[in-house]
Amino acid sequence: MAGQRALLLAGFLLPGFLLSEAAKILTLSLVDFKEKEKSYQVISWLPPEDYNKRLKENFDFLMGEALSDRYTFGKFLSFMEQLGLQCSHFLRRKDIMDTLKNENFDLVIVENFDYCPFLVAEKLGKPFVSILSSSFGTIDIGLPNPLSYVPVFHSFLSDHMDFWGRVKNFLMLFDFSISQWQIQSVYDNTIREHFPEGSRPVLSHLLKKAELWFVNSDFALEFARPLLPNTVYVGGLMARAVKQVPQEFENFITKFGDSGFVLVALGSMVSNFQAQELLREMNSAFAHLSQGVIWKYKPSHWPKDIRLSANVKIVNWLPQNDLLAHPHIRLFVTHGGMNSIMEAIQHGVPMVGIPLFGDQPANLNHVEGKKFGVSIQLKQIKAETLALKMKQVIEDKRYKSAAVAASIIRRSHPLTPAQRLVGWIDHILQTGGAAHLKPHGLQQPWHEQYLLDVFLFLLLVTLGTLWLCGKLLGVVARWLCGARKLKKA
Figure 1 (cartoon, helix red, strand yellow):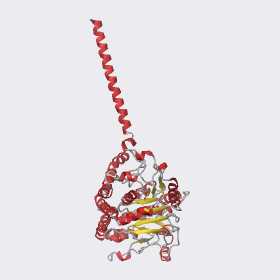
Figure 2 (tube, helix red, strand yellow):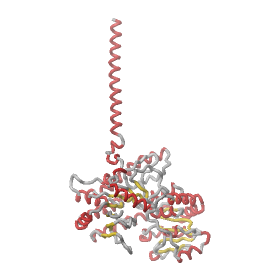
Figure 3 (cartoon, rainbow, N blue to C red):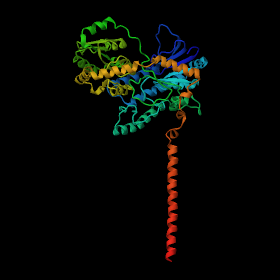
Figure 4 (tube, rainbow, N blue to C red):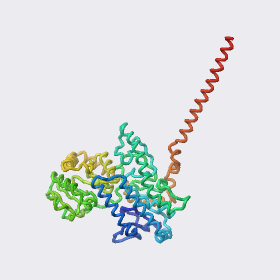
């Protein structure tokens, strides 16, 4: 990408994606970057303080509901409405938008947690590539979607569907389409405010304008399905070289000898929201294990009335990648975030998943479908049930074998995820875009794409032909009847 200029637009959450050091990149984020050295410029922006406070309250409420197993799509939609308002706040910042226009970037790189980066790219009038930070299916990016073996998002089906599975998958498509329309509709006011009538983008069409889609997943996890030439897997992009585990952790692991240890990391939410009943059941479940347990949880937030099990060590921070690579690890208990799953696959570690919200249940459905882990719902978590699930995965060697097989698939790509990402961006910059990678079908209306006009035409021709044949037969029958009457006369 030497000599080229790119703009990276991140949504509400920003994964730390790596780009070529030769590129001149301006990164626009909602949070401050803390890096020792930067080969790029950063613009940090925050919405007005009163709005920012409401946004945080809304997010905290959503996470609290998820941890209490009261998460609903309606509550998620309310949160997305806040992000739509956030987008309007940003687009009103004429100073920042003018600065971005004057930079004259060759390419915009967007991350799709929400839709605002797509609208900013459209406002700048620049070609863009998009990074899908979750697995396939969370949004419709125009891929072929054979419902007989490609599960619809949140259908919790695998690619092996029986008759009733295919019926469910077909019906779930309507639910998915409606939910996508509802989410995209929260940006309608933003689009009306910032785009003139006659040139207002439609978000579902805007997604299909991406020159490339980089998907944070891998064939080791995803069910095989049709892809388009402009769709590239880059799962494991954040993978780092393994380092030696700090002595503090090594000393703890050594206590348990060949029994090994279990790593528990459920993201930051469980620590921040102190779900006491959940903590009590999990702590009791860990006491049933012969392994040591290293649990990422803020010690300062640990409830005083819960006595920590003797085989459990809670830490504010842990080197997750290095611990997953440790030879004595036996199991990874995870919330099902895509980056955590990719790290576990990288090192061939079987999993027990406790999904909280968003794409996590679907991610863990793939883990179960690939046979290198199991999942358990929040409402099912009791000490005995969780302990049974963990012992099942640790003791049944088929889970470990499947995890190792997935690791071989993940590691055996001819290029690393970073090389694939940078190489494909170089390709479209050199060729002036990715029109040669996108089928014309992405520009066709849905009735043409699914040949409904052709089916209607053939149906009308068939019915017209049958009607005409009926008329001719009627004429012939009447003529024959008339001829017989003449003979009798």
